[in-house]
Image 1: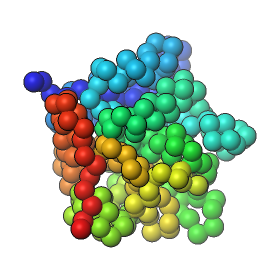
Image 2: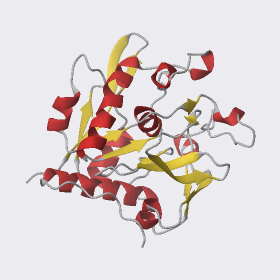
Image 3: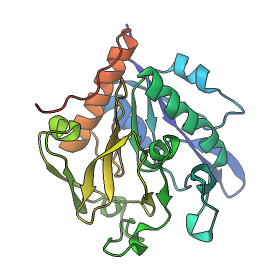
Image 4: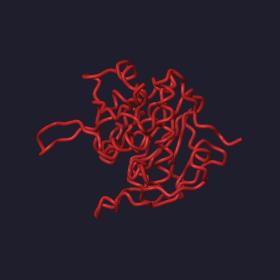
Length: 259
């Protein structure tokens, strides 16, 4: 049996400001191929060219990537404002039902940044467009200048719930993470368990309560240095193991809790 196939959700881009393209980051491909030991497959995030049912058949799991466009606020019952930024409506139309289908079937996914927010919205939660404007919150956006290494540098602590799945997987109650997001979870969906928070209370790690499969979601970007950063390596390793179980015909178990 070959390696499991992981569908990596793409984002829309304009090459030379005129040629439309869909693309996934090299970091995401390397994280899936090397840290998770799976086959990375780019998914066009547009229901006009693919369908959720086709993707579920073609892939053994999904990496819900970050991206500059935000989930459109109409998806969680809020009127659009300039603060909500840019959008990718075709991605909304494909990925939100894909998440619900994966949760129902137990098909594994790992959600990152925008993907973390998509999971919350798909299950009925809401987002805040600019969390740094909330009293007591810090600025979670990436530095506007500097090298890529400086933008993805570890910036704050995330603390996990005692005995929760992130504590079990990472063998620690606290880890240092990078931070490259402007919006974040406002009201968590009923089934979304916030299992880790930044020092200012911002939700940073979650899973779906009662889901039969792997549903770990993080607000930070573990794909950066995924093969060398110990936190990222464990996250992608566990995700790869879940995809291998799915490919072998077994429903992957959720990450265990500490007894």
